[in-house]
Image (tube, rainbow, N blue to C red; front, side, top):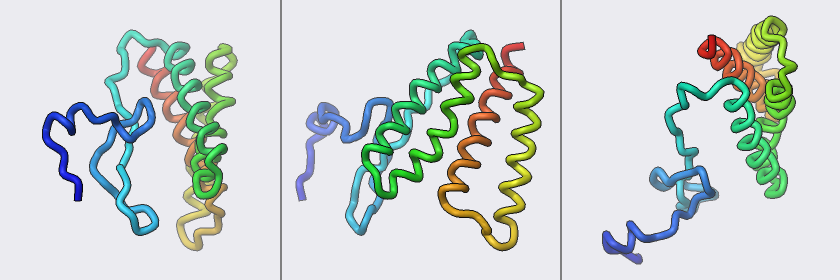
Length: 148
């Protein structure tokens, strides 16, 4: 086992992608790998919906493209992030109708609940897509509320 000194550990390049940090180790296919999680920074209080949407669009696009390129199980991540892109783009273009967004958000929550409450009558891809949409709609609705 290779044990690093404190200085080596501090100066070691992170095994995680840009925008991610290592938080411990997890097992993948029975092997220990770095547990890389997104770096969560405090939201800029002065960042409006437009800037927020531009930043989220860029991040979701990067993650979706990387997951698609990787393939395999990562395609679930692709589906989760790819469905977010049109919403962020509409927000950047100033084309979001918040009333329609709220209705769609409520419908998606109901659909997910109905599909999962008794029988799990949903595929993994459908689940990732619904959860991705719920997440992006929630983000945009919350961000819009905090802008007012």
